[in-house]
Image 1 (tube, helix red, strand yellow):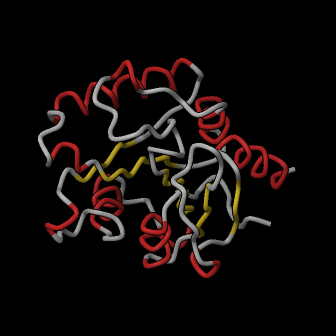
Image 2 (cartoon, rainbow, N blue to C red):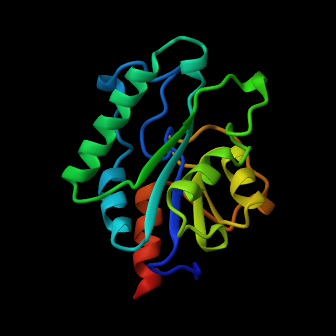
Length: 185
């Protein structure tokens, strides 16, 4: 059983969880494609969670591969398609910094969820689920007391995550949505 209710927050990593991972970076909104069933999964979970926030490391901005405006355009495409599927995302928080900069917002740092809480004060980390495909996603979630779900399916980053960092393992966001739906019945 996953211990959640409508007062909980859902935190989602982006690449490999919501959209297909690509070799390199997504540099154009045309290259952003959802993982199978992801937008429908978000729509279903929109009715199950108080808040849904995306947390994503995007050092491609810091590397000057894309501009911040292009990243915002990619995120607008994601929001538009989620909305068209009758879902919602309440906030997108991203870290544009390089991995070597040591900033507080880059996962596994907690800057992004802390920014989400500042924007949405009703968020309680101990009543939140972090969904990610990388160890850094789950380390961040664990450090704040979140329930953690590891996505290890075909779109996920090929990385083995030690069991102490996740409470549940799913192949996709769609599988997680089905599991949560069954959990509520």
